[in-house]
Image (cartoon, rainbow, N blue to C red; front, top):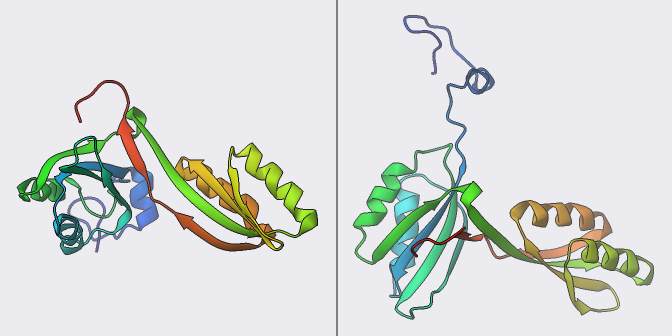
Length: 187
């Protein structure tokens, strides 16, 4: 139960708390984690988030310029749980080298998505125009479908999905977000 003013039993709704500014809205946290490129590291990181009740929204892992080091980029919602405690626990993991909570305004982030969309002869032209507007690439064409590749922000990917869904979205695959800090910073 969440109560209002001290020494009262007035219960407040979630909407009232948000309107009053008493509830942490929780920005999306993009964590960039440098780890040793060893077996089991990703399992330990994911397990740490799961034990603390976090849902990982997106998770990508890839090599860096040093073959002994990988970069894990994951996004979580900070509204449900504070992120500070889990980052302190991440620092304690032996294979974790560095963690950065990237600020949205100081970050360039991208996602890749593939969309397989129904397209007969009459719809194909319109679908290709939409892909061109979104700076997408048609990577495969069959008699009944088109596969389009889109790269951009999460919002751009979602906007494209909304545009092509009426054509008949057959299948969609998204990579998850990758991000890098703007300007000159340490890795």
